[in-house]
Length: 399
Ligand SMILES: [Zn+2]
Ligand SMILES: [Zn+2]
Image 1 (cartoon, rainbow, N blue to C red):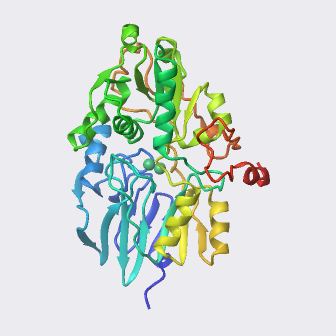
Image 2: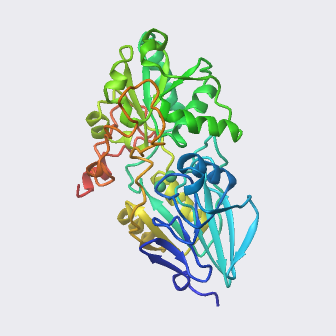
Image 3: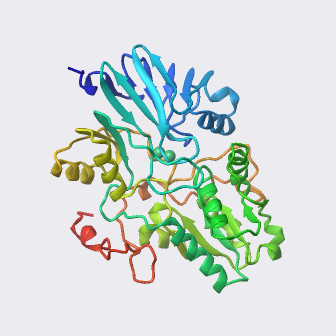
């Protein structure tokens, strides 16, 4: 009989430890051997001795951390390639989260665990789609693990942005989005929707957009957003880190319409707090339905939840006879929805004296614990088409 994954996959202060393999998955502190699911700062940390990841994730780590910090030795693993480490078979499968994101699949003595890191099931024109892998233990995140979180089709959200541009052709539309993944996805969605004008970027977003293009994701014409060039930006789309859209940098643009692209924009209170006129519910994380569908598809009798809204998800799984276990891993879930200190040496475009990490709107108090106040009024495309809304679930939630 195959050993239970709890006997060979342990939760430690550094993160999830594969004991016979002698490596950690997405460790939060420097270790000898790390397997990294993707390049977001809460998963890909600097200064490991050896890092195993996809070639794209390794390139992203080098771009963000510099050669010296991104692992003394780096080994890339192609899709389908299998390595053996201390008798543990290791392979990677797409996670559909950002370019390079991969599920880490492990097998030891016939027992199989799959650790996808962050993932989503929606189509993303910048990376291959998530591929469900049958396993004995599936290790999921639960960032949006509440029934109220149902992400609308991203194409509809992009449609809202284009509609606003048509209504207000003189106003600059500033869209807050994270540097790794979200920016490139928004750009590709805009191109697919027929927006072929130049798209302007805050300086903090340019390096990773260039890297995406080098890695084979064309983004069309991109230009640095120069506040001094206010006239050219009238009626243009400007992408900037979420922290920059609400500060002086954005206010110097031509009568800006402030948008933020994030799964949290489903929560009206957050949009309001951040002065967001045009919330766009575009998320790179699985929503409630995607979490549950995925769990059913992988068919694991047991699911471990790394972080996020684990209570509701564990409860829902229990009703279906799946054993859920909350791992409460620390240090995860910090990047995607909070603004990282992107490339500290990077000049933030034409925004003198303001670093892209400045004025973070999202402090810890605004974390996943904040009470959802859903943007589910009839005027919002974010409302689920089935009319289930979020309110009933939300009303039942103990805040
Ligand atoms: Zn991530
Ligand atoms: Zn994450």
